[in-house]
Image (cartoon, rainbow, N blue to C red):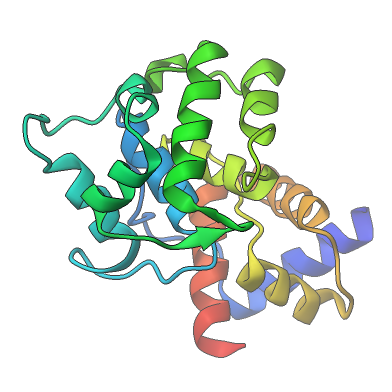
Length: 207
């Protein structure tokens, strides 16, 4: 993989550079918002504050009786999927299920695995397996979930994979793309999440 790392590193240096701007996303300290964002972002436009994924999070946080800080997965685990879809006004599906159902299922399993608040995230095997046990949840959104909570990582989505293919001249798996970019971030001493965003932004506009 050393050759792939070197080649992609050079491609990034040529097309983007490593003077990376801040990542504009994230929900540090707000695990409910992070889980909603991670799941509702699947094959969806992120949108503005009042549309897309951002609107989902905003509507959940502004529901009656809920404070500004959304950091207790038990709150999501306790709501019926159809009710959640009604609150966020979004009936989108993934893997043949309402995304709201995926969120409730994931919240329930993560709570049982000891991940209820943002500070509980330790990326343990138990937490990761609990998330991946939910139909509709995969390793890409697990990485993104951690990123949204402030853990540097790479979400190897379609645009990231397209960029890596352009650099290497071949298709690689999401796990390999993530590993290569994380390695480059480590060697360059930059934040993996910021590098991920810079690549994603470039790919969206130029590839």
